[in-house]
Image (cartoon, rainbow, N blue to C red; front, side, top):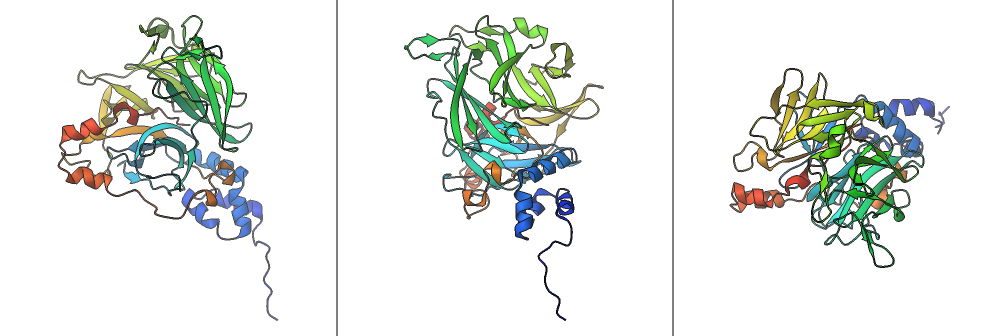
Length: 430
């Protein structure tokens, strides 16, 4: 008798889920086409969160790197010989170019918020799947010509939603109120929800933010910035809670209290104080001193580390806390360096796979670096569904790199074309 085909799975659905959770992201994406049941399982938000939780501790932290040609690369810096892998994203109908990235604005759970230099728009990128989504401009943001707009990316576990927070303010930190008067202690705050694909304006912030404030950093359900109270100009670390969408503050290390001031235009001047999330800790970098908050929210837990600074280094920015008392940082926005705090030694980290990295006409001086989380797979509810990206070329536009190589530009010409500090962002490592 001919055997009849059964639609029932040979293995229980729970066991299939356990097996799939142990696989790499790219394999999981391919398995969505195996059957309807597998597609539903992999697309389930709970599966995405479970996979991320299981793989976070197993997968190495990675760098998301922007080259001098504004191309994104991924680097596993825990490898004995770090190799850069070019990141390809599926183009959508809104984007004119998918290889011209000028700034990384944040990262959270493997997603990266980046600025597209070609059309000056923000995109939420998933380096693991190559999917992307354009983030509409906040209708509440101020004119960028006359004001500052700073943002941060984070995850709201209470609603299982990714959010982008936008702070808009003038140089003194204030905006015009309804009567036309200028208030120095008000910042417009708007929040973008990936689930609803929309912006909302919420209650403004009374904090003064630095004109050169880097993007906010995410940790423990909050996005953090360095700022000052609008009432007494006292320096604080401001945390925006993505769950209840309110601000709270943490006191910085004692030395910061007298080290921040306002310029003649009432701008907060603190270009050397950068909040960061390194090794799962909230940190504050001040020159070569690094303060680590060992217990989140407790000012008594600030612990100081000092990175030895050679005389020829004008600027360093931390990337990550490694094992055995080592720090990963960038030197003068040009070179990755590993510093050992125990024996006070340092070594350059050479990254292979970057076009022309070892040629004199495109040296390490033309590179910018940023830190990102290990990438998980994200389900359909994250806004990365098949109909939201179009089929087409998968890869990076040719021409930018070739034009730079063929037009005879010298080293100084290329350096003037760089975006400088914009290439380096403080991103979360959790």
